[in-house]
Image (tube, rainbow, N blue to C red; front, side, top):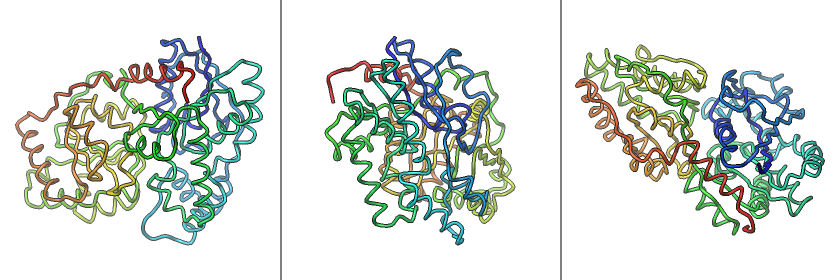
Amino acid sequence: MKKVLIVTYYWAPAGGPGVQRWLKFVKYLRDFGIEPIIYTPKNPTYPMVDAHIADDLPQDLTLLRTKIWEPYGLASFFSKEKTKKISAGIIPTKKFSWVDKCLLWVRGNLFIPDARVLWVRPSVKYLSDYVTTQGIDTIITTAPPHSIHLIGLHLKEKYPTLRWIADFRDPWTNIGYHSQLRLTERSAQKHLALERKVLQSADTIIVTSPSTQREFTAKTSKPIVLITNGYDDDTFGEEVPLSPYFMLSHVGSLLSERNPETLWQVLGAMAAESPAFRQDLRICLAGKVSEEVFVTIEKYGLSSSLEYKGYLSHTDALALQRSSQLLLLLEINHPKTEGIIPGKLFEYMAAQRPILALGYSQWDVREIIAQTHTGITLLVTDAPAIKQALTHYYTLYKANQLHTQPTSLGAYHRKALTQKLSEVILERGKG
């Protein structure tokens, strides 16, 4: 077995999509001759936890943990709830209080690239001893938080022969919320400089979307490999009956800027026009949801149709997907979201329920959904097209014919994706 050190902030028992990618890679890496060694914080601040998220992992994994100090504890002195939301990426777009502004300014300008940066130096010290004594010749850093890549950068500078693979689950300076951090010009330039240094120093870069691959190709000559997220066998689980209602479900965080007001407006109008549609309609939201979303749903008279589940375990979220009539994939209408392919997309596809994806016109999601015949992708502000799609799906629902016939899903199975990763890990002499 080839030993590989994986440096990640998110690990079990963290809940949410950020942890799924590497939990699943680690689940299968041994099948391809690779022994994963995990390095992660001992006392992290996770916005959500899932006690069963690692149930299918090998029990004898080597797991290294060291303490981390994060500033969110001090910030919560001013507002515990606001701090928790900002640490989870929920940034309000309306009613900015002075506390919001202060927390965002501190987050963006005093902790670069992010609030986990204070873990970098002690991690480099600890891992320097480990890689030399254990004969580790390959490390992988996965981000966000992007400070994790600084650990790889400093280890690479210290040991030039160490092979470093940088995995970007999301972009860095081009990520949607980056422009909301109230950065000074100096801070913005520092982010760009750090991003450039990471991209030019890593031996190989892994990205999750074609758009990010194109973006980074313009910034570095290093090899850039596309490995999307995917679905696993647990996606199928036990058989779950379909909801008897026309249930539209969204699983995952629904942030303020991602609030699909046009969708709520269209649904509200359809419910007002047809008592039967209103009686059949259910809107199910699972995960962290911005207060602005609830306000907008109420604004369009849909509160009686809303079912809010809160945070669900991964197992329960998968069951909800399979029981829904229609699955919602929602994104901001902005060029910076072009390369954001949510991990839940692949679980949605495997659930074999139609997907209504609403986002940016050039969203990378469009091609994947079209190729797999798993739904439709529309501009999130295109009210006529959204109404036409909903009317079509509702008609099929009433005729008991609402289903999908996915094709080419196998390429997105977690084991197939791990095989692709293993080929990157075992490749030598490039980059």
